[in-house]
Length: 113
Length: 115
Image (tube, rainbow over all chains, first blue to last red; front, side, top):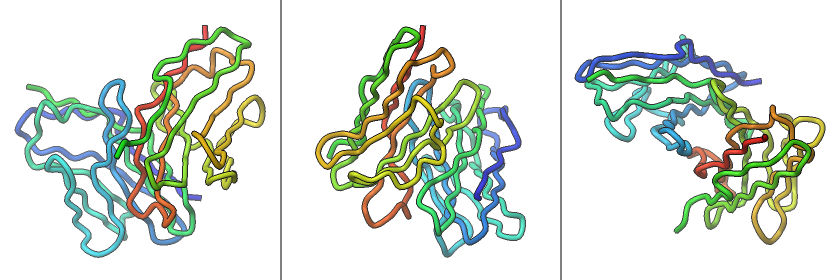
């Protein structure tokens, strides 16, 4: 069965600094990988996905993520953080033989002004 | 093209009552997924449905919880005899019939409070 680990409950970054939110996954086959963001009292919004091809994936709001098969990781990154990036971020994985997506516990990102 | 619509947004029930949560998928989407988000926890998969079929209910509690997605109308998540521990945000997501290669589209959720 697939699983996702987000080792950090919270990440604090100063505005303007680069940010990284970590994610590792476990699936038996080749994965589909996703990042979603949740703002307070809202649903989840899609940020980016890895399906196949280039390991560096670019998404919404200047975010990107790098698929690393050997380390089974899919870390979310942004070169320069904004206060408005403060939110709850979820990494998710789908085994290509399954139809459901499994989410990590989420990482709360605080961007400090 | 409306997104995934969930209602009600907020639902308060007394212990022992029934809760009915509704989800209308995006137009053209025939796959529906329900997730539960508990405070300080991530999203937990509950059930995956297609029209008139439950495909995967491995995340559903064995008792009191049921889900349906009829041929006509929204998908319904039903919780009978609610208890305080059922208080959570319940999210619905949908995807098109050709699969979820491109992820889900989520609704804004129903926040259930059991008093």
